[in-house]
Image (cartoon, rainbow, N blue to C red; front, side, top):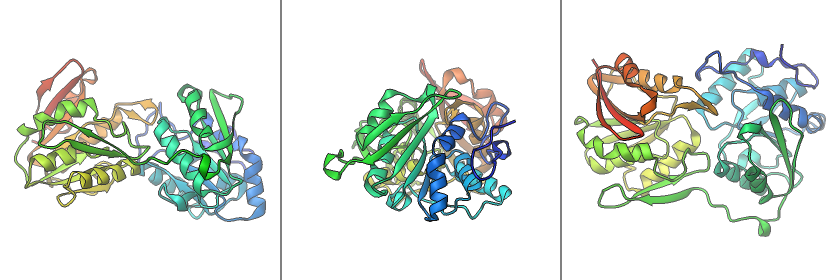
Length: 390
C-alpha cells in the first residue's frame, strides 16, 4: 500500500501509469522522491490553496504526474503550471489526470518566462544534467516572485554536491533536507539580484570537424542530452552513411541536437530530412542546429513520440542512435520500441541505419522488428548496422 500525501485529501500514487511510455514490472510512475517533495512543501502548498492565488504553484520535471496530481488532489490546487521535457510525460500526465478527474488542474508550458512568472512555489524533480538545472535556476530566479521557494528533490544516488553549488549561484539560501527512503530535497529561496547572478548562457554551441567542407555547428539547451558535444557513437556512424540507399526523404529518429539530420542535409543536397525527438529541449536544440548549418529549408523538426506522425510504409531511410535508458533506469525496451516503429514506417526495401553500444547485441532484435540486418562497421565500443525492410 502506498503512503498518502498529507493534505486535504489522500492521493493514491498506485493509480498512476506511465503510458504511452514504456511500462514494465521494474518501472513505475512515481518514487519516494515525489512523496518527499510533496511532504516537504506541504505548508507552502496549503498556504497557496488558502490564498486562492491561481498560478502560484509551478511543477517542473514531473515524470508522469505524481507531483502535479498529488498537489491538485491533496490540496485542491488548480491553475498549476507544468513543464515536462518528454512528450510522453505530458501524455501520461494528461491520461492520468483524465482518469482521476483532474484534467482541469494544470496547463502545459514551455521552459520560458511565462512558466514561472510570479510563481511563489516551484516543485522541481532534479534533472541529472547540471546544465539543465542551471537553465531552470536561471529562469526561476529571473522571472518568479521575489519570495519564491524552490523545492528540488531527487533520488540520493543521482544527487551531487554540485547541484547545491548550481542553485547557490542563483539563490541566496540553499539548504538540504534530511534523507528519507533514499531521497532528499534541496530548498532554494531568496533569488539573488540581477547584478549578482551569472550571465545566462543557454543555448550553447560547439563546432566539430566531421570531414566536411565546413565544421558542423551543434546547439543545445540545458536539458538536451550530451549538450553541444558530438556523441562518439554518432561520430562513428556519420561517415558510413555515405553507403545508405538513395532517397528523397530521410528521418533522423531520436534526433537529439540534430547532428544526423544536419549531416544528411549537408552531404545530400537533394534530400529532405525530418528530425524527430520527444524531448522539448532536443527539438528546440535541433532547430537551432539546422538553422546554424544553413539547412533549415530542407530539414525540419517535429516533437513526437517516436515516429507517431508518420504513416505505415511511407519512408525510404531512417537513421537512429537509440538511447538505452528511460530517465535514470537502464532499459533496452526504449530502443526496441524505436526499432519497431522504424520497421512500421519503412517501405519495402527501405533501410534503418543504426549505431549502438556493441555489448547490447541488438542485431537479432533488429532482424525481427525491421528485417535482414548486416553489420557495416564495428570498433571496440560501437556497432553500425543497416536493416532492410522485408
